[in-house]
Length: 475
View 1 (cartoon, rainbow, N blue to C red):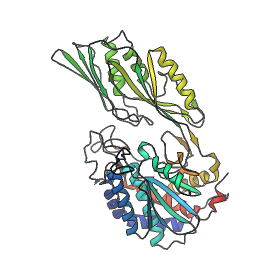
View 2: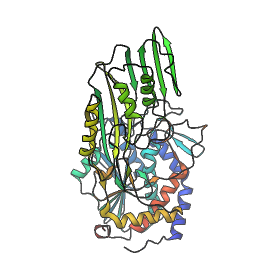
View 3: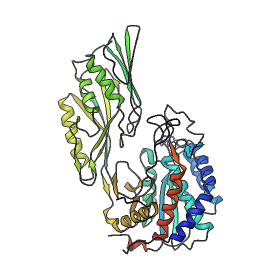
View 4: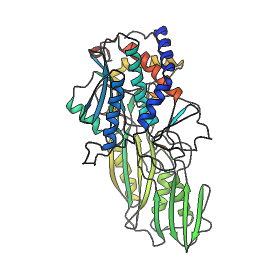
């Protein structure tokens, strides 16, 4: 494939168009955020994913039809908007969101626009990216761009809890020859680490001083707080980022950490480690060794404490976070969310984990296991899209391997590409530590990021539209 050259005049025309439609883009994203589209597969009264996701599908189709696009939904598993004819070039986003959770300063489902940010659940993951593609399609249609391909935006409603939407589409429809998944960072993601989520449970019953342990509510997320209630007084156990309150002959320990996605942990402390460390220093339940193992397991983010640390050249190190913990039938349990390198297997990681847990008196239950994926066969497109991103943004970046999972796991010839990109730190007067990112409280997207995403996608389509996708995309 020849070197990619940007049509700079057309790119600048697109830039001006997107800037002139910024207010409309913001309005449409806020309309989407207003629908609390949490996927509920168990809702038998409104299959397949509940009333809110059905409402979201209808709103998406209505918005697309307002702009003159052909629309269709696939039994409410997915929906699409299309323009043009011929060989299909597809983009994919998802419009389901994770639950709001707690700790919001802003209303999660009444979007707020302030200081260049749009704040609300789904703003970044993934409704903002869907708006970018929708407005790319508006630009192409309203400026009369002579598309050689049929351009389609597909949106799903179950990406956050299983991807049954993409699986249904893959089983019932003819898949496009190339799909761009708008659900990661720029430039191109060439591989997705494997995922292993496990629950580890102590075989020993804790002593009677431990009354309750509550930490976290989602396996992929590090908790912001963790709380332990014990009978007795432990005046020397409290440390930094801890509060200890004695009441009625009991002590309540509350640890304050940083809520991060386990796949991309920040430098802040893990609230579960803080709590386990306090319990160990206080000598709480030293006999079972349960809190000692919890402290060991949560002390790092590379799986060293669980005996599973490893790395490869493409992916870098394994990433691991202890994300939830509690008591059941007097036994301590905790979960770990693990992202392992593309050259490793779930069986290998699980074997090492199980062996170490057994030596500490813990049993292991597998909650989810997904093997890694890579996209090496699409090298010409990987190189072309990376070069386009670098030229548009004036940077030099390389394709990367990511920890998250996208629709590229379920679709053929799919590449994750955007719309995430480096942005300045969020202002502290708007966002508390551990707030503002995807899946976090006060989730947001920068309007500047959306403008950049639209422009990179426009330049990408200018190039991709010159290719014969059935033959030109393979290395």
